[in-house]
Image (cartoon, rainbow, N blue to C red; front, side, top):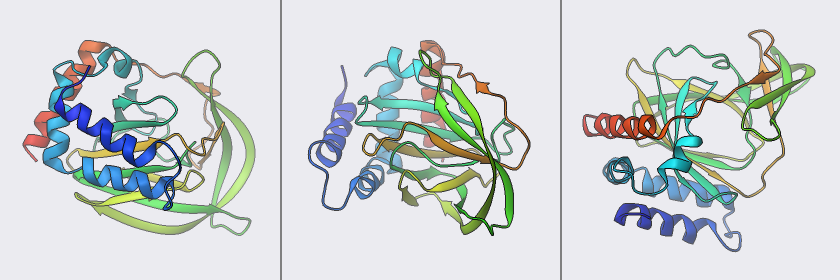
Length: 241
């Protein structure tokens, strides 16, 4: 099922991301999609439509949760291994077990800052890096969506970029890029996030200088009613931006 905004978003993603890889590559294609769908008025209409129960709220609720990096991760549209469109609600000064972690992703991503401001740092792993950290290999527990973290030894990281992304900014990253991001304002920040299914890796790399991580971190999926309330709250936040 789906209303007008849901169908239009699905058509846009299918045209840009499905079928043969575009000449510009999947990262650039994902960047185009979030720039189109991340326009505040268009995203508000999409989220308001989803908040009425259109789409697949049962499946989306099961894959929505508070992330270990300290933001609310709300799945908007799921195309399985091809692409997943999410809204991220970043809270100011949110405490979380992995809020300082530097990590990469399983596949290329693109994001648009819709409200607020996001700070981001990019890193390279290198022997002469200034930041000492512990490296983990992160994967998903078999038969569940919980994170498994396997220690992989000490590492040193080199900062290569630091920036701030205000509302209207977009960015795209290949899967292997090491980065960390956080809310850079005293008010909530909203981003639209698209993860593509191309070049999907079996694990990610996580680096932390904040002390050891537990071996597993559980995800706590939302109930459908809580998910729909979260979407309604997000729509209201966008209306008042």
